[in-house]
Image 1 (cartoon, one colour):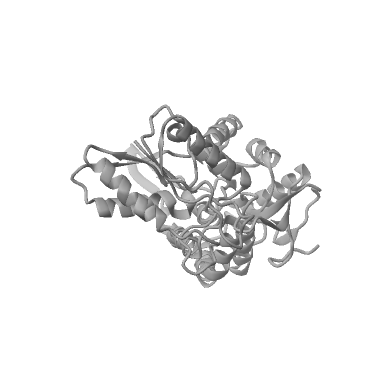
Image 2 (cartoon, one colour):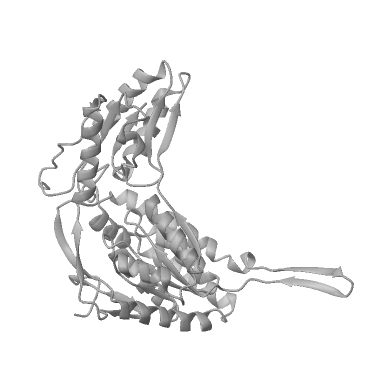
Length: 397
């Protein structure tokens, strides 16, 4: 089946074309607000991976020789196209991730900032010249492309994180292979189409869908020169270890457990506003979410009361619904882990201030819902404190 954004089968984007590849395995793609399967995603075979890398290697050789002026012309056009397709990209994000449309548009805005930065690559790539470092000897330094760069990106920012990576890799003369999360593949396919429309030569930007075997193949393939990864800390450590062992440049960003410290002299209304937004925005599914509030002294009970008010006022609904503040979590497995962790804290003696475990959104009973949750009197020994919950849960210590 020929792939378009409207079909029920999502293929790869290889060598300038939407391609089914040779792999027979597929993965369902869900709308987390409804629980419905919206598409089948084709997963790459080893043959697909090898072909994609070979095409990228060939494309990198010619793209790296193209003038900076021509590279930036493509990036300026790409930036214009992304800006003109914000609504379409946001709709794809919300349909597969679940975040509200305003949040989806916000992440696209952050991605646009990186494209704009990449458009300044002629300045960024300037080398250096040192005269007479020794008698009759001058020293020149200049920057060269690495070659083939692979980006392995998470579900929580289907546009922003790929745009952290691809524009910079492409601006600096590399070919880029994107392996997006299988939960949110459609936005990557639209980005591929926009790169092509902007005039990027075939093979410089490709999208390859896959599972652990595909990731392993990228990490060990001799013609992949660099890896950029965003995801959980254990996987980031694995990516770093395996990638560097195979001679690749690696940047790997892992998870976090972010704390907000609220002192007694704080403006507690202002603090509560920001803590609630940071804890429950995007259903807490971001590595920069505030998941721990350290309430000091007299601030504690007052802060908890104010955060409770704000948590209860949050409208949880389909991200496309007018007035929705928060959407669902990404998968049933994610929901199960969040509920398990919250229940363990309650069993261990924590106090449930706001309990979102039994939330049901009318008309969307099969969605993957967890409401805003606030837990007080959490200790540092509890899993709710030690684990990255990656859900709309704020623990107070």
